[in-house]
Length: 240
Image 1 (tube, rainbow, N blue to C red):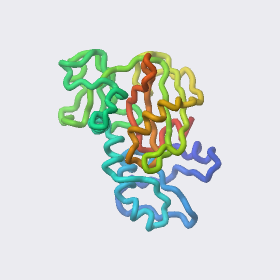
Image 2 (cartoon, one colour):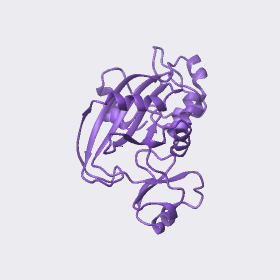
Image 3 (cartoon, rainbow, N blue to C red):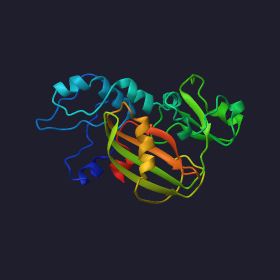
Image 4 (spheres, helix red, strand yellow):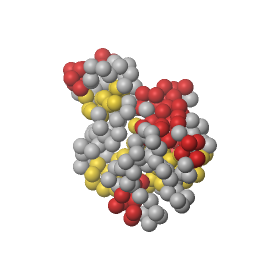
């Protein structure tokens, strides 16, 4: 439950956002009629993946995959490791192994934060030291701050690594350096996702099934620079 029910009902496809289930037992009973169970958080996406067979036995329609695949994409630290193994590191921001090696200003963020939570612009090593929790080993990442007023959010429906459907939203903000939502939104519009960008996204999703969401900016050479992959319904699809 994310407060999205008004928007979900407005889609006029019998979608609702009223469940309070967070992945723990007992699992929710399915309604009497066929109904898809779709995650609105990365944690629940992992639990749906783990329990997909049991959920289907309860009557839910579930589109998911192995939980390790979901975690490799949804966890921002694991995403970097996965991208490097797959030869896709060029499509992510440059990582910094430590504050001493960072190019400031840069981004410091939690590997599991959602909707802009625990994501900061750090301007110095002192900033990193002040912002970084003491028990942060392996759970926070330091990376390049990518400049630009335009940001893109693309939602995809994926089955066995094949992109079935894509819908994109372009956002314009009042600054070139920001962390959402601490920035003024200037505008938003439907974004026709270039075929070559869809191909790059699909290369990250070779073992994935489900709904997911890519957030990125576009570099001057045309490459997408992907900040995160959300293994869930995104706010762009739900609300915008």
